[in-house]
Length: 252
Image (cartoon, rainbow, N blue to C red):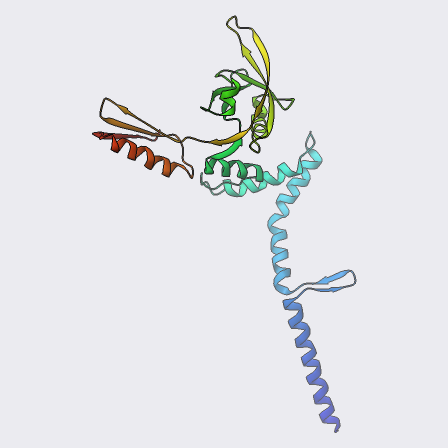
């Protein structure tokens, strides 16, 4: 083989080797000892992400070092994620935690396991029963409007952590939950009552109807879930069968 031909072959091999190396480093990550060689595209993305979040990371470090109280890393992370959606200024775009999404899904389906009681925050900062839902374990156990739920499964609660208390009262059907309520007697004295209630599948009623003024049908929709459409049709057909002269639809 001539010297000239040998040189040409060596040059071709070098070009092929360089091409393979260049191609590999552009499509795959290569690890060598304590170093990693990244494709150019991934490297540029990494630098871009670093620059984008450097300020947020710096502020997070500053908070952890300077804030008076101990910082919850999970809450900081959730706060950043919520901020992304709040920046959209769209009331229908929100970030939900796993627990919030589960609660939202239950509300949307209109079915959940629980005791069937509607609660609110009272003026005394206690969890106050608005009303038990008709024919639910809460009503059967004797819960009444105005009762104060003090404990759930032995843990004390106020309205400040009402969401957690509500989650504890929910659960699989046919499982027990214990609650302690405070109820005023006719003399205004508070009496404490312990109850053990067996959870059932609760069906939220979002549509109600009646006849007013003899021949006017009245339908009220209190909220919307997966069952609302079928319930609306059932109530509407019932009123139509009774030959009403008109229908009032209340969406308030």
